[in-house]
Image (cartoon, rainbow, N blue to C red; front, side):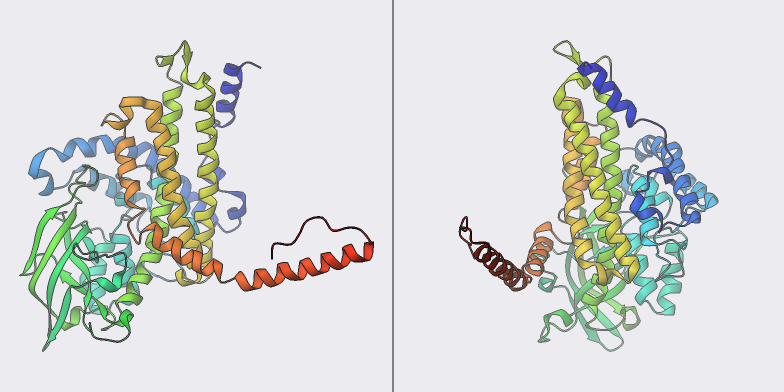
Length: 464
């Protein structure tokens, strides 16, 4: 078989049309309901036939200059209306913890979120976009009835958007005990002073509420009880959006990643979420699911990059050294490695989702951390191969690859940098050291005794 025949057979074997349900890994199929299977197929169709084509119009409707921050592309409202009509709305709230969502498990939503990760518009069209998803979970889980009525209901309806403010410009925010924004009680109000940045979503004119983490008790001996979370309406007196930051040159208008200053911002005591000193409890409850949501969508981004790579290397106009790109062995290796890495990473993500479904996010800390660290690295590798296959075109605006790489790269920092998760995972894994050494020593002793009884000479020497 020639190299050309082999490449065609390889591509043909993976190119047979399948529904989204057909692609569910066999180890997860038993945990996916028939209702979820129907919704999954519908999500795939909606993303592939409605959202991805609409991505082009979305970017065209953004326009240019500062006006991009004053409005949002009208096509988004059209997509939202279609998603609602199809029943693809608020898919992310897991049924074992919330009553407000569509009634799917984390596993089922994970499969759907993968497809949404292939499109700029899909997640928002289904009201499943960050940071709103995490903010809605905070309000649904910890909010008072009044807070839910004022903020959760319009968020669930897709009428407003929100932002989450934790990271600060002047401290190392990967250690959240370092945050310095103050929340001082004065009568029936709290006065907030400080700065936040990377406040994703705060640039959107539809953003009406900030979920803000600050310090109410900086002198508490327990550093994890110094922080609290409050709800601050956008536009409150003393709140200044100073600028929107760019991600590798992309400003993500109208969403934006804002730097925000708080100067004597007064909010009522009723804006406190759950109570003083409960900030860490809240953010851990929020960030756990958020990390897995990002990982789910990143699988979809990697799949999209692989599709673009396959399309490029099979373009008959693109030949190098007398051959089509898919006739070069290294290209087929890139395709094969990408498929292996995507499929392996998907299992890590789905395993974490199933572990959360078993109980809650706290029950799946290790599994969530594994997905949070591994999946963005995998996606970046696959996207980079796709970029390389396009050459100079891969780094410009003529493909979605450069923007995809920039967005995914932030996930190695967002919701805690990889190094923090790896350090904790390493510590936890290393706790097994005594148990492991004792087991290996027992095995050595048994082996030595077997050698002695057999009357043979031992080979080698134990390193323990």
